[in-house]
Image (cartoon, rainbow, N blue to C red; front, side, top):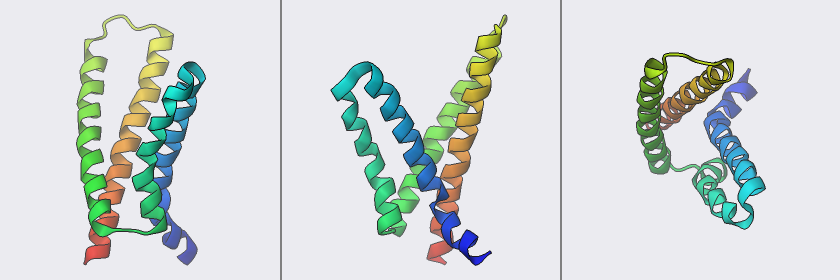
Amino acid sequence: METISKYSKFVPYLYFLAVIALWFTDVNQSNGLTAYPILLFGIPFLWQIIKPNKKLNFSLGITFVCLSSYLILAYLSDALNIISVSNQAKQFMVYGGIFVVANFVMALWMIRNSLKRSF
């Protein structure tokens, strides 16, 4: 049980690294070399895994809570304005909703970790 609690603080960073890796893979297949700057987004998350910093952790958490809140509002406004929805659109909305909620939860988890470390 101690190992789970020891490594659970890395889950949000690994999640965002996985999202960045998937985003890079998708863009790299279609655009080639222009996708490599996407990998720069992973540097703060790798830094938090290698050498944690309370201020960086808190600022990453706040930034992604704000972005995730915006994504939630955009997702809800998109979901409420669609009148006739095909099966493919429903499937996309489900996956998009899961992604948006997961981003929000991981951002809150990062803030919780930074607050837990500071007290």
